[in-house]
Length: 254
Image 1 (cartoon, rainbow, N blue to C red):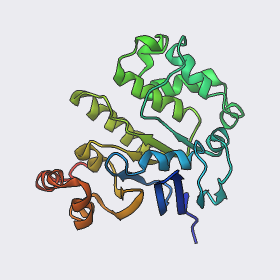
Image 2 (tube, rainbow, N blue to C red):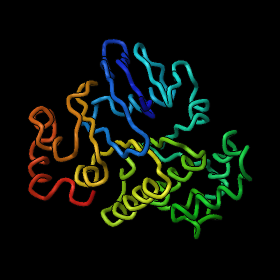
Image 3 (spheres, helix red, strand yellow):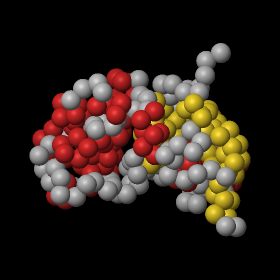
């Protein structure tokens, strides 16, 4: 039997009296592009932090390619092939775009295989930042900072990429090109992607499977079309947005 790329089993995290992640279980197969959907406070980013070692879980397990990640530090998880981006872009100030990506290329699993500068330039070109390679990161527009976040994650050669709100702060004209980039990375490199996003229409057009959360629990899982019609999801937080997505075709571009 094929082992899932990612297997999350009965994961829990509590902050004092708040249960942020409550008995969460799901699997992710290699090659999938899936999404975590939920309102603010649903536990989505906390879940990402647990998967990537920025927080320790209280109970349950996270297995990546069959390996238990319990107790692993973030850099150890990255070196296994699981990378992420963050809601807030925090590049290394004082460095150029290419230098920021080169830092990520110093990860042992990349450094063993090729020269960091060569790998960095390939990635910068792939995400559409070749013309800004020598630009200081402090001068980048926000849309390019989002691309830089993805570039730094890609530089570690992940097999699974977690994207935390990649469209946050972007204008309408910036979202479609970034969506296209994510689709290309998924298709061309066979990259498995799990993302969080609050822009429902763009989110539903991008993913093939949705895991819906509310108050730290998974309340539904299925295709975008199934999720926008799921009574519990609608009751919890989509409401009128679900009707708009349904009438407009929630998954028309997927």
